[in-house]
Image 1 (cartoon, rainbow, N blue to C red):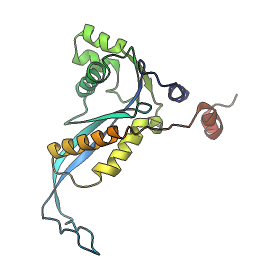
Image 2: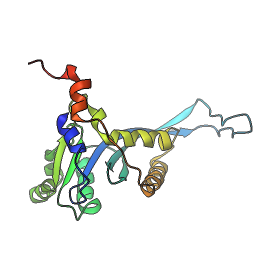
Image 3: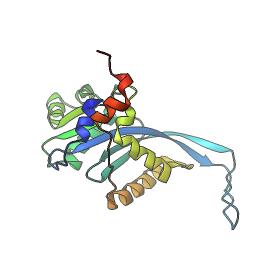
Image 4: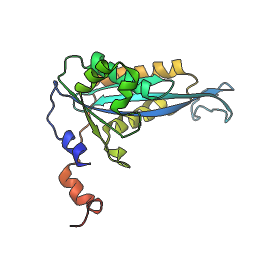
Length: 206
């Protein structure tokens, strides 16, 4: 926990950005009947029946101090999918940086081994040398700022029925463009000193 909190206290450095990563799933649901449109004094009405059209995955990367985020929609969230996202992060999103500090949870797919399964050893090593991996502790995913971005995405964009992956991709891209244009940042104020007081029960007694 303190490792993550220390990372969040670093000054903004464009050559060594702090990027947070998380992922979530979205159930794809299609209407079986046309909703009744809203009228003065009445909200839009939806039928309780629907057709389920599978589940899509959303990868979220965000730079809290840079006011930047990128969300990509995929069919799955396998090791290969994660490795592909990491390669894009390094080579497309941050090609000029010296090193990227990447904060994420310790899901089994979020590991250097995933890069070696997806790419040739020299390519996997090249990507790893550009990364500083920082993991949130077990049951401590609330420390991942990318979760905040996913919550905002859920409230502003995904809190409704979305019928298919193309629609989801368009909606997420529009949300991302608007939020990046606003350069929305995250002001993280919880520090190690706060943790040692408010979360004292998590520390061993010496």
